[in-house]
Image 1 (cartoon, rainbow, N blue to C red):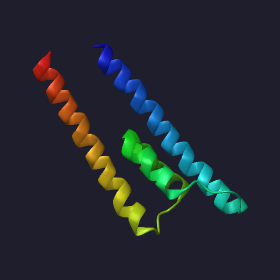
Image 2 (image 1 turned 120 degrees about the vertical axis):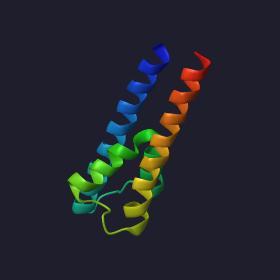
Image 3 (image 1 turned 90 degrees about the vertical axis):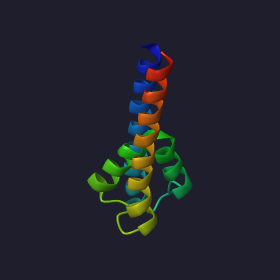
Length: 95
């Protein structure tokens, strides 16, 4: 029970961070300021925030012409979902 709550809070936070990073990077791109490295954007997505990054890409229209993001972020979302499903099955089996 507590593990599910902690995991839910973690996923909400990491997705919010990924979304905010996409918006911040788009703003910095417009202002010609210091950008967020692509590695950091992918790290946020790979660590469970792929949905937030994907929504950020679409809502800010950011990185939508980069093939690595157009293919990579949805692929990371599928990987995130598969990992969550596996964790659910393992937890259900153990508990």
